[in-house]
Structure formats: structure tokens, C-alpha cells
Image (cartoon, rainbow, N blue to C red; front, side, top):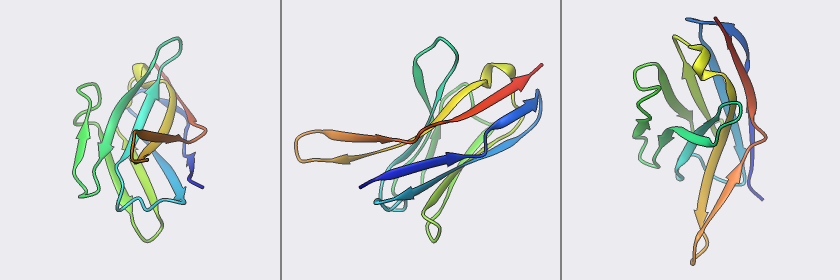
Length: 119
């Protein structure tokens, strides 16, 4: 059973920083693609950062240069370091991964962690 548990969200002023964590069980973060999604109030969930099994990170244009994704294989945890936060970054952040079932991708999601950036 795959479980993802996010933590680290909170209230921060514009220009500040937060580090989100996603502790995984039932899956090896070092051998699977791991992703962070952002859902702003009233909007659809959008991917902001991905990390391949090889450790390569990719970022959306909205966060590139400000957010950095990393992982600790020993702790089976991925992180999202968020710097120079902007009120537009407000929303719920979800950790995501997927596995191939042989016919399709099965996605797994954490419960999300709220980030609120005040101006």
C-alpha cells in the first residue's frame, strides 16, 4: 500500500521560504518518479516540480529558479524547498507518484499541505 504524507506548510510573508516534505511508504522514492503539485484556490491542480528516478528535476515556469526538489533515499522522503515565495504560490501542495499497472498509470496522492503567502 503506497502512502504519501506531506508536511511543512504554513503561513509565510512574501519573499520568505518554506520546505515541504513528503514521506513515502510502500514505494521507493529513489526508483520512482516523484512530483509536487500546486492547487491554488478555485483552480485546477498543476504540477510544479518533478524528479525522475535518475534524480533529474524539472520545474514549471512559475517556480523555476525559486523552488528546488530533492530527495533523501535513506529516509524515503522527497522535499520541496520554496524560496522567494509570492502570494500566487498560495494553495495546497500535494505529493504525487505513479506506478505502471501493465495497462495504465495508477496515481497516488498525499493529503496535501496548505501554504499561505501573505503580501
